[in-house]
Length: 189
Image (tube, rainbow, N blue to C red; front, side):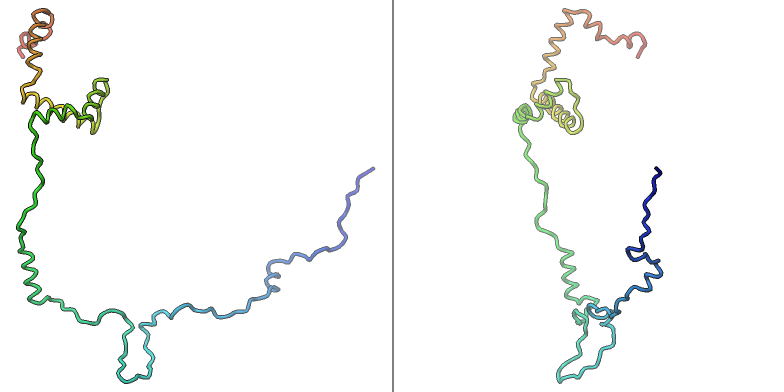
């Protein structure tokens, strides 16, 4: 048996769809009313004022705010004298930067040896770490000052190391050979 499709031609069920032009014509228009304005009209300050009946003793007020008192463009003599006195004024006391009294070398050396930041940096350097930036700058300045203080106080380890080097040279002839600069002898530099 062959299949027969059901048809839907029973008649119009709903209203038909109108084209846009036809829909615009049948639509109800809203009632046009004037919009309410908010505030005063623009430029009302500059508009000519309406004449109101004046009462006795009343003056027309300017709608603009502010003082109407005239300002002198050139100052009077007393003000100029005051300005000259202010320009010539010199303070009795002078400001100066505070000078910190330097510590004796012994105390400064003790403070450097107890500096926790410096000790931590020395430990890092001994572990083979390379310092950079502010740490390197701080480390270099403090170690240089430490060396200066040691030479100033006579606590320098160079004299002790010189004695040990002389003893080492006597014991090890290769050490003296390695320290000798042969370029001066051979090349004449």
